[in-house]
Image 1 (cartoon, helix red, strand yellow):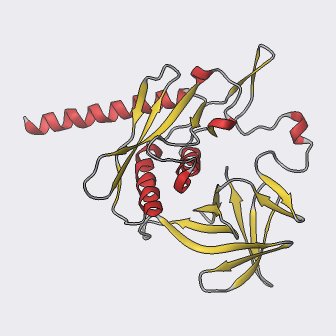
Image 2 (cartoon, one colour; image 1 turned 180 degrees about the horizontal axis):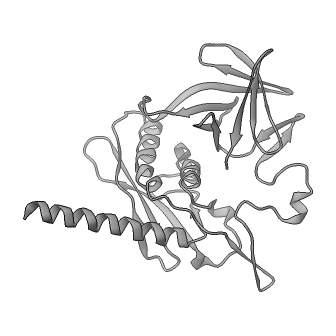
Image 3 (cartoon, rainbow, N blue to C red; image 1 turned 45 degrees about the vertical axis):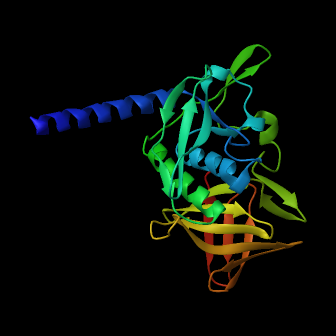
Length: 265
């Protein structure tokens, strides 16, 4: 009897997860606030930027609040991260609401015991997003409102004028003659692996997603920007030439080899 009850419970969880996945995929975008309630400034510890990055990685069309598309509000979801009470360590949970402020999804708890504030919050957030990624969400195209007419566009499609521009919008900018990514966090793939590029004061830091790292992100190297010079230095101290193209793809090369990291944002 106990085995039957456990089986029935497992089936219920499977059905519930499937229904939740379908519901989330029926929305066309998700909005991330610029500041979470438990913090005292915008994008503190880069949690808001990281949330947008993780949502995009999990199949959502994610926007920061100040970049939200001109679309029907009820086509969108509205994200929040809540800090839960914990005696030891940090616990975070991701909450999604609809346009009527009704909660429709709550993630598993992300727990971390790091002592440093930035590290423990970022680690707990990443772990909370593990359950979001497992949903397999694939949001539909955004429908923009234009002069009282609904115009369907793909979420990553540029308008005709932008297609004629040299640089994709909100991707890269030309600074001191170099093309450089605008986003604080960018997602890349290379040889089947996933990488995170994080903007820093001296340029960028390149991380590989790895289960062997304590926080899931293994530092591979730094991209240093000095006026017109862009160099990549790996963790062993070896220096390579680095460059970004108009699509945000990253090339790292020396005299004999070139590695291409493809932007997937």
